[in-house]
Length: 397
Image (cartoon, rainbow, N blue to C red; front, side):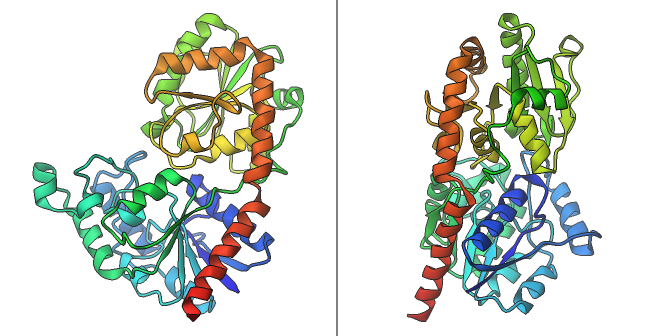
């Protein structure tokens, strides 16, 4: 069994890092695996896709991919003569919609976001009249008709075959796919993203704080978002408002922010420590180790690795009950869930764990135990190996 994985960027961003971890997990399970991911110079098709996306209003939290311009990755994957092609995040000119439709090799596709069953959107609303549920049309969208989403969806509906096997890291995303108008008969298997538990583990908090120059006696709340405040979906604004309530009860608390630098308000100077973007897992693990609790105030998310990385690091998680996040947190056991958008409840949950450190440590230990049971590369790799075997068995019938 030879599987070739493909994604736009195997090292940066949540989807890219998840794709690379899945590739490694499959290889660990004994699957002959390789990965195609463009490196180096930005090619004409990626430049064209970026410009077209920007013209559509694409921005962090509202990202779009038209999927019109072909890329050379399709040829590279085909030349490796795989038994199975496994697609991940394929925006920015990695592969066009039509190129996906021309794949004749058995195809597995992990749903890192909603794009595979939407128009050009990577995330969008789920109200009853959403275009991805019924097919995009002027009648459904009225004055807000989106011609680019309509075009992308039409290309997908005419190009893609119905025997694609989708894999979702959350039941939430799998349920969305099952209710979509695009390839509704295509099966969806739920397999969580793997987390390297040998890297993300319960490390010494004192050493971690010394590495980041954080006071040893200050409670620390962690926030990890690659794009920082630039992506409104990650809830940075909600966290900062919640922190004003936290600081009223814990004035010496520190907020450790991992991601693109955000400008701290003057009254927060000294209370916010920013690491910038961390591309190395070992340094990222050291950031989690410095925390007492990790906050994930995402307003919409699939299966954020921030949650699983924090749990594997034996740190409790406080989060909004958004998207697939509730599937990753056992309320009262590995963390606390809050109503989406309720900033006071978010602050109260953070204070609860800072008020009772023993409770926080117990939740962290439970989170670590769950990570070892459900999210290790060995467990996830075996699940993907079974998917590939089933795909090939179905082809031979």
